[in-house]
Length: 223
Image (cartoon, rainbow, N blue to C red; front, side, top):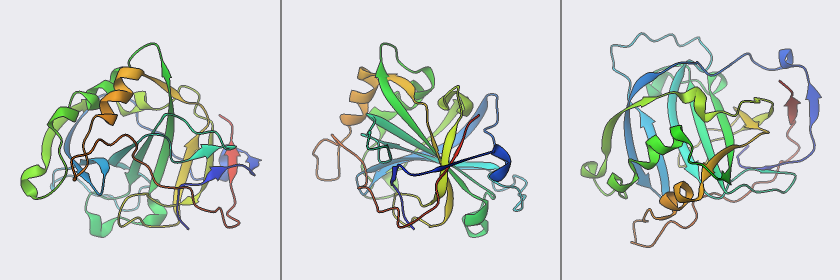
């Protein structure tokens, strides 16, 4: 079943009822590949092939981050100006990634009075990114990130089985929609809106339409 959906009817459960996972704290240098494809902005991680691979560990590796504006998911019908989907997987190599060991973290953002320091690291790269037409359009960069800073301080979340929302989106992935938003500045939001599609027009919006829940179980975990 596909994402995004409107989060409405849900059951409150204890944290022990869902797979244990938390974002790792600390600073890391991540080799990234950034591009626009099908009018969607993506930053993919590129791990060294010599990295150790433990294919049994749930959501061990940061895989990619997708930015959407306005938000794709909604809470009780409420849309947010901005959304990030931060995806973690169990293996470095794509042919060893297991859907049942992957996790999609959906984080909303409201517009506030100050720029978000971690989001700004991505904003700084936006002028260098163009729509993908050939391998020459792939922007490769090393980013020093504190991924945990992209998550809200209060990490209560809704969880359901969903999917990615870009091309080749696998289904039945652990999808966690965080209840509390982070804050970005209007200028940061406008920087994303100044990106251009393959036809040269501005990406004033970049999102998929809501899908029907189709009876999917949604749970709420209060942290």
